[in-house]
Image 1 (spheres, rainbow, N blue to C red):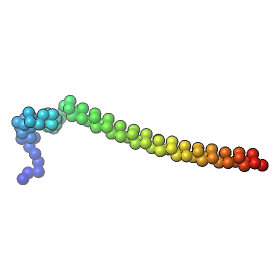
Image 2: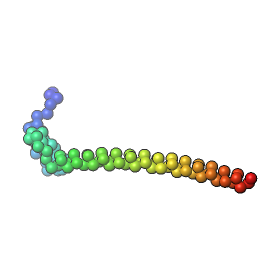
Image 3: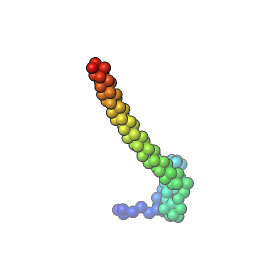
Length: 95
């Protein structure tokens, strides 16, 4: 069995089953068209845009989570400093 798929055969199968597979068949058809023509179709371009946006979203989400973690650390440090200041003031007032 060959490891390679004939693009023409794939295209024929997809076209025969297009009604059955709907959007997936259209997407496969567009990908095959891109492979044959070298020009990306609208679906392929949209998928690449979506992947890029998803990647950007994940990066921003990760950076935001790191920022919130850092803010939590700073809040703890701030609270510890307040406690130390309050303790020092109380000790000063006792003297």
